[in-house]
Image 1 (cartoon, rainbow, N blue to C red):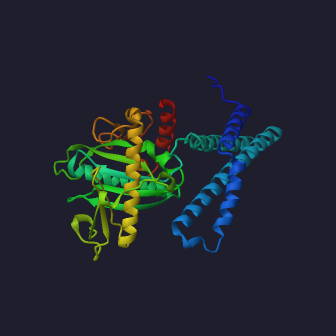
Image 2 (cartoon, rainbow, N blue to C red):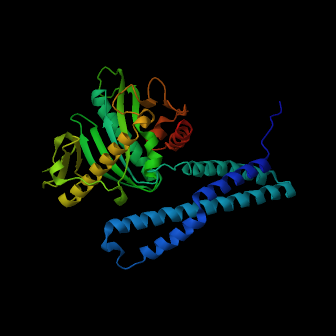
Amino acid sequence: MHVATVDPADQLKEYNTTLASVEKVLDIPAMRVEAARLEAEASAPDLWDDQAKAQAVTSRLSFAQGEISRVTRLRQRLDDVAVMFDLAEEMGDEDTRIEAERELDALGKSIGELEVRTLLSGEYDAREALVTVRSEAGGVDAADWAEMLLRMYTRYCERHGWSYEIYDTSYAEEAGIKSATFAVKAPYAYGTLSVEQGTHRLVRISPFDNQGRRQTSFAGVEVIPVVEQTDHIEIPEDEMRIDVFRSSGPGGQGVNTTDSAVRITHLPSGIVVSCQNERSQIQNRASAMAVLQAKLLERKRQEEQAKMDALKGDTAGSWGNQMRSYVLHPYQMVKDLRTEVETGNTTAVLDGEIDEFVEAGIRWRRTSA
């Protein structure tokens, strides 16, 4: 039986159109101008006098240069593969044609990934992100599962070259964590990771059950955008209670000999945030304030857009907002309940290879909005 194949010329034309659309949305000429301006700022001798500003400038410059380079390389590869097909045709070279087809498939994937980025056009999508992972129903297995998820996301960040910083970890008594909050310091981190918000369900043989029974456990993921100076979240001093305490590690062991950890309670809302990543009390207080401001901004946004709450979801219920299921026994399967994307390679997913799920989530969000 003869199977019709896609004409490479048609694929090249399609990819060329898609890449041209991406270049237009990203506005590469404007991005080049911005990169030149940021390069000038980054070379200023007094740049690091203001560390927060310096980090913002260098992070944005790195991002802009990366985007320009990525698009430029894809455009060059598209031109090169067209030449490869022409050469294969002229010389009747089967090996060159096979190599060109392989490169064309890889190009399609790369251009598709970049196209997903152009869908991140929400008000806060370009922001850095604050991610909180919490254990939910399932006892010690849920605490262990929350720690597995934390590792999955930090490995995902490392794979993408994204800087992250763990602000606070609350360890469970027997194993795992009750919760952890970390900042992802990369442009578009919020828009990208916000599709991970919701309840993640794990089914496996419990390593904590001496009878080897199957256990279902749940962990919740919350993703909020980092506050910028333009947000103007003013918090009166008398609306906060600030406590300092000693950082603790797994099993309650002390990891710091000084009271450098900081907990801030926002009295009107009852929101409690803390930072205890073994830095100075002043730095921990600044980080905790940043988390509190981000949570208050998110609260304000939810109040202003109450009608969108159904779409955004509520991470409180284990069964109410399940968005992904991870099954390790009796078979191996990770399945997204919104997009139907699934894979049997659970080891890779738990090691941070979640791009397929994230990209499908971004596309799903756009079509569901």
